[in-house]
Each structure stands twice: as structure tokens, then as C-alpha cells.
Image 1 (cartoon, rainbow, N blue to C red):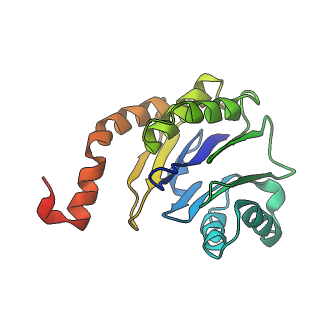
Image 2 (image 1 turned 90 degrees about the vertical axis):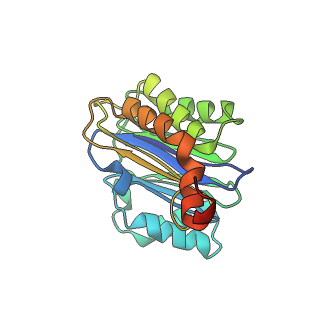
Length: 216
């Protein structure tokens, strides 16, 4: 019941994720990103413990593929899990457990991987990937948002989505962008509205934290 993607901007070093689903609080359970390290998605019958574990593996020097292999090997319930990993070099990997419900699919590209389960059709992840790659001149958060919208336009999931998240990290220990929508009948559209409102202030909030004397 989820479609999502993780992406990297090689120009800025940012990592990010965009996710939407038909259950609430997806932002607290599915995407995990760390500056300079990479990103992890853990979904379907979601185990949020796999996100921090995946980031720890990436920090230790594992590639995306090695991280997926270790995560699958470390959980006896891997048949229920759907996972994706993006490493610091832009490498990607994914895993579909044997009991992940269809329609399910994944799509990879340079610095991006998209995936989903219980989708309306198996073309959704490819539509997300293609939208992300086509918007290379945009900031990472906008590219992720465009990709999420493309996934919805391609059919999305089988049930109406009610929660969504847009998450981007850069250099600081706190996220550059962390926007969430819960229990909304048009979650992706509401996330777009919130992101458009927040976008002009992104850098200012960083300045307030790290150099308050220079803040507006």
C-alpha cells in the first residue's frame, strides 16, 4: 500500500525520500536518511528498525547491495519486507520479500531507486524514476516531489493515500526538509501545497540554527 523513492543530488550531496501510503504516519516509519551516508526505505509490513540498521551498515562501508544482503540476512521476517537502499556513491539496491503483495515493482536510475507494493499497476515506480531524472536542474526536494506526483498520476496504489512525507538531509544533523501529511484525503496534493509554502524558507531555517547573527 506504499509507493516511494530515495534519491541523491551529486551536486549538493543531499539525500532524500518521498513516500505516500493509505495508512497514517508513514513519515515516522518508512524513510531513513543520513547526511553523507545514504538512505533506506523499509515498507510493506514495515519494520522501522531496519532503517537505522541499514544506515549503520552504510556508515561501516557497506555498499547498497551489501546493505540489502545484510538486512535480509539479519531479519527472520524478511519475507514480509520490501526494502531499498541508496549509498553515498549513488549505488542502489532493493529487495522484495516473498510475501509482499502485488502489484509490486522497483525501478533504478543514477542516484535514485523507486519502489512500491499493492500498486494500481507495475508502471508506477518507473514513472517516478523517470520524473526524478527529467528534473535534474531542480533542487532534490522538488525532484522527489515531482516523482511522487508522477507515481500518483501513473495510478498510485490500490487504495486512496492518506499520508505522505518529503525528507531531505544535507550537512547538519537535522533534516533540511521534513514535511509530513497525515489523515488527509489528498495527501500528495497537500504535501505539494506545504512544500511550495516551505521552499522559500529552507535555507533561512539552516542559517537560524548555525549562524543566528546572520538570520533575517
